[in-house]
Image 1 (cartoon, rainbow, N blue to C red):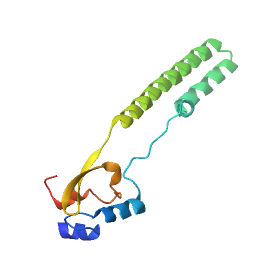
Image 2 (cartoon, rainbow, N blue to C red):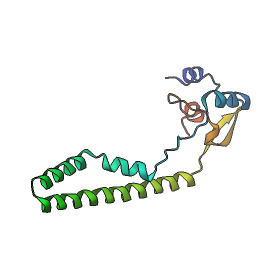
Image 3 (cartoon, rainbow, N blue to C red):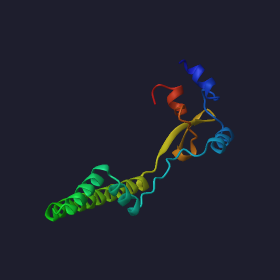
Image 4 (cartoon, rainbow, N blue to C red):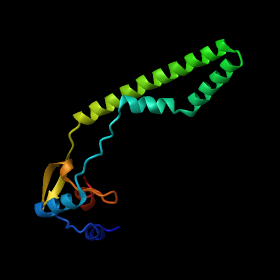
Length: 142
């Protein structure tokens, strides 16, 4: 698609938006930020317990216990407990690491405002899923 068509489709100009236009788009489309995904320990545990394979193992342990195989039931129970515990710990550690990384990242973007490049915090840019950043569209070298 030619640059002129892209600029027209995005309702902008090759030299960028004015501050007023950028503010209006930010009000209309919202901030350019990722939605925060909150993970709770209870939610992690619920996901671990809802695993179909673990449910099958619990069913097998129940049938084994009911038919007199208490040793087999105990072994299956220990396997289920270990699986849930290890999965819970790993998922909780991963969620904490992602949260720490997300909190330490501060993005800035170069954009065109009023015909000149400016560095702005990325949350001040309004992007829709079908759009790209203005400098990248208007100039292939960015």
